Length: 415
Image 1 (tube, rainbow, N blue to C red):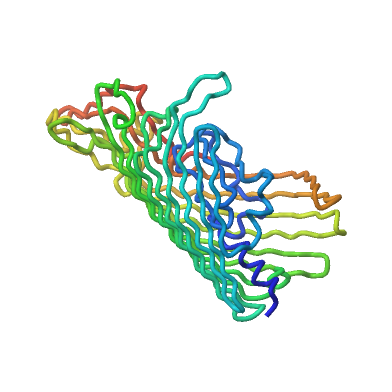
Image 2: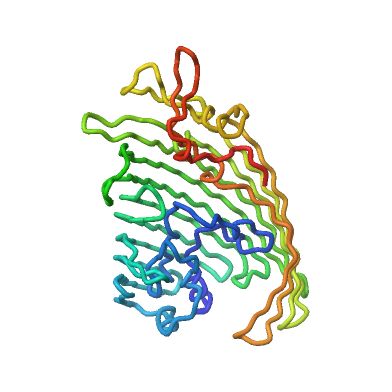
């Protein structure tokens, strides 16, 4: 058993996206400018050098070199870090173990983010607290086999986001992954398989963490489950390297908005009306390495995305005004886009990219690419369906009480 095989395994123990996602023609690189999604999970191997997540900063600070990077990435049985950034604090403890055929990583980290001054010198009332735990166990019976199990629990509380109308009081994620490698660790002839489960629950409202200046107090409950499966084969042919990958994702998400009153709470709409998505992807990348400095790659990917909105026509009853139920997701989308959505939609996306890499030294890399990327929108972009619309059950007429308050996606939107 070679030590470098285990060391390589130890330093690659966590990735949220499928392992083929870094290939050219990858549309996962294109993300919405603004999102209400929780921050990325903190990988246990990167936790020592993590920075508090700033909701207004699009830069990923972990991509930049920091003075303690070599210490953070070095193998040590036990490492601890405590730091502060302005008014924010971050603490992390990591334990690592490396045996003849096994390895392990355990991490605990906590973030307490507080307000800061923006570019104009104005105080921003932004904050959250986060507690993260991760455990990785790996088994390497031979140089050509590796089995790795990863579990991560992420709990974010009192996430104050002034740029949106609701604050996420509690976000809890459970992430489990199984990775298997058969073949060479250098990917010269290797089959990699991955299976993962993500379970997310989120509670947000517009009144607990801020003065409520609206006549209506509301809260949103989100529940999401994602199952991922992928298979990848890497092979070298002289100066050529080919990566072929297939993946499948099953994604179910339900989001309910409720009105909060002193008398009772009641459902008044769906942010996600029981969305179920099946996503299949095929990708292939062929690269040619002229020498250590020059490489040319061609990547192709195809995605089939099928969505089923199972509460498309569901209308919550209105206890405040009987006979005037709240509009269904279908009615909201028709009000905004003028079509009757039947609850099912299928989309295809074909992408390609030609990329040239020039690497004159270990510390320099230059790339130029020509790409055609087709991206299918995420759940927030396509299936949001919140609006202050009620229906007169006798006449069938829809009454929009507050057009400016609507948050409506577009389910059949083109790529």
